[in-house]
Amino acid sequence: MRIEIDPPPEDVFEHSNEEIVEMFLDSLFAAGASEKTIKSYRVAIRDFLSFIGNKHLKDVRLIDVNRWKTHRLRSGFEKEKKGGDPFEVKRKRQVTLHYYSIFVRRFLKWLGLPSRVATVRAPKRKEVQTLSAEEVAKLLRASRDLLDVVIVRFLLETGLRAEEALNVRVRDVDFVNCEVRVRKGKYGGFRVVFFSRELSEILKLWVTVKSLGRDDRLIPLTYVGLWKRLKTLAKRAGVDPSKVRPHILRHTFATEALRKGMDLISLKNILGHSDVKVTQIYTHLVKEDLREKY
Image 1 (cartoon, rainbow, N blue to C red):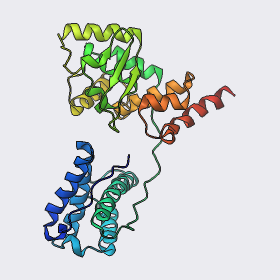
Image 2 (image 1 turned 30 degrees about the vertical axis):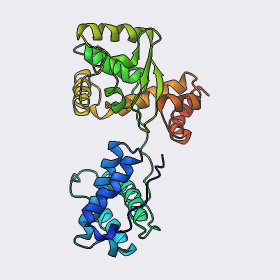
Image 3 (image 1 turned 180 degrees about the vertical axis):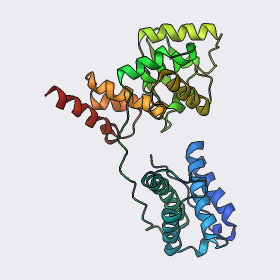
Image 4 (image 1 turned 120 degrees about the vertical axis):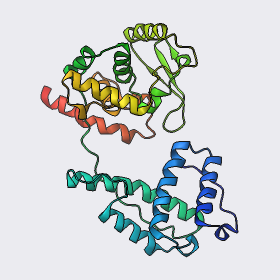
């Protein structure tokens, strides 16, 4: 989603690089950008500034940007994990630089500097992974407590992103109509998602057992805590841990919804995608089902 921001002050280049960055980020915030968006811009721009060293932004040229991109593609980033599959390392590096180059280009354009900066092409998406019905059943059987069941069922039935699910408060859940009001979506919008009557009874039991109030979070975990719980559950269930993470459960929900007849536009709205083209990544999996039936 494009955010329109105010132009920089006329004396912007009289300030230090760090001060200029903060001016830009303040403009983003004032225009309604989320904290997560601002954090992403800050990390990307600071990476570029660390590369150009003591050079002031007013003296930055296109060649500086191209040297930065070339260096990162060849040598990687400071906190990049070393070792592993070289093709996967290169792919992750290219994904990171794709977004970094978009953020830096926007920043430089705001300053009136080289605005013809080309973004680094994003690599092709990895094949979408999903869980089979048998793997889901294994996870539920291996659940050690009610929270495990709530996590697996809630993510699978609503298709929420992890961050969205962790932001759901008890007051956002309509136990009668089996609906969840998602207030902090990825693009800042509001939408409603649904779940089964059976899950409604499980959630009511969970709220009662934990004595949760209306303003309490339904799943009282951090993202790291959620991640670790799913990995531990996968190992206990005998399911490949690399396949069990929050977004895989979201992928599983989406493919199952298409297999059971949901149209693409409805699925787009439930998933909270900004463009139906993003939702179309799931259609190739359903096509394989049709091939088998044929």
